[in-house]
Image 1 (cartoon, one colour):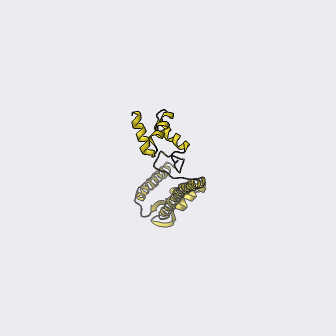
Image 2 (cartoon, rainbow, N blue to C red; image 1 turned 60 degrees about the horizontal axis):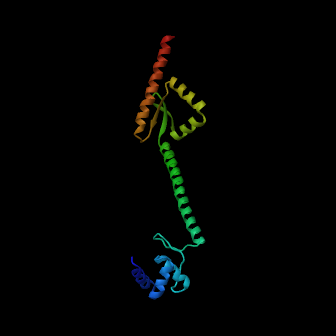
Image 3 (spheres, rainbow, N blue to C red; image 1 turned 45 degrees about the vertical axis):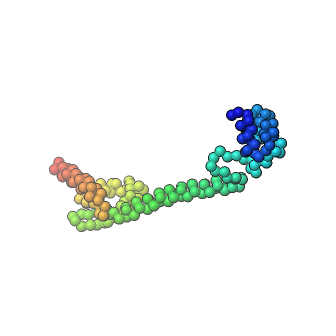
Length: 181
């Protein structure tokens, strides 16, 4: 821009005289921003009420207390998300326990049911007393005791097929021992 256009622009924007604008621009080497700052320092124009300038849309004026409050609110929101995830874990565990309580292991001999135990109990026995439970299961197979599951789940049929296959194989093995002696 030419010098006189810069002077006119500065006089228009700041409502000062042509002469004051020319002097301020000459001092500031024809830089408009520096000229405005120079005029502010001389008291020719009024400074803005805030000395903070922002480059983004958020022009909030926060003090330290407000910033800490905002951070505390964000921490509470994050904590609630973690609690919700933790709660979701317990809900899943409760659903698993409920499902296991509705599936039963039936112990039968010659189509007569001796015992009907929820799978939850069986899982606890396997975890804490496997040295007793597993040998009793194997011993029961050799005494022609059948094990099967009952419940409303579709997967039970597949497991029952596996349990029947194990029972048949043990019976075959027992028959081979009888024939050998």
